[in-house]
Amino acid sequence: MSRPLALLAAAVLLAACSGGSTGPGSASSTAASPTSSVTGSGTQPTAEQVAWAGQVCTATGELTSSIQGLVTAAIAGGTDVGSSLSSQLETIKRSVTELVSTVAAVPVGSADDPDLAAVTSSADRLRSSVDALETAVTAVRGASGAALVTALAAVATAANASLTAPVETTQAIGTAARNGTGALGPAFAANPSCASLTS
Picture 1 (cartoon, rainbow, N blue to C red):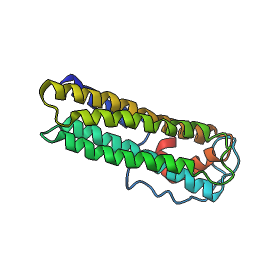
Picture 2: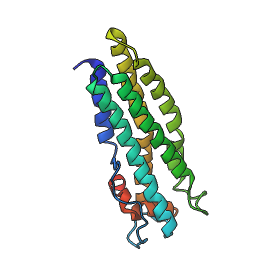
Picture 3: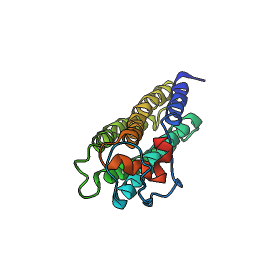
């Protein structure tokens, strides 16, 4: 396997170890009834907070799956790899928009929740990483020979960087669910859509 493809494969492995890509078709983000079994020392979440938490978890999983799809397309290569990557990039951009807007739409009264800060900061870093990924993907189009190898290596590097933000979001969700000091951490713990991210 050539070095750029090895880097791309490493990106897939990183995503697989990121703590749960739920992806499309994952468990519903419908609010589960808050229970007294949630972990952490936070307050009891409202049904709205539990529903929001599920939406954030689903959006995080879908973004990770979208980036994995781009890496898979790059590894597969082919004569039209540039178009394949461009198509996957559009899916990633939609997923980023969904995650960022979902995190920002925190339930009323939750904006100062101590469990929100780490989730918000990781989501905010998504756009810049995707901009770098878009630049790398654009360079693949029309490239061939050694230039294509170089361009695919740049895609591998950018994909790894793009995976960092959803991995950080997943880690922030898991930490909040286990040790939450507000209501949003217990909300993540209470929503079944977050189970693979909080275990």
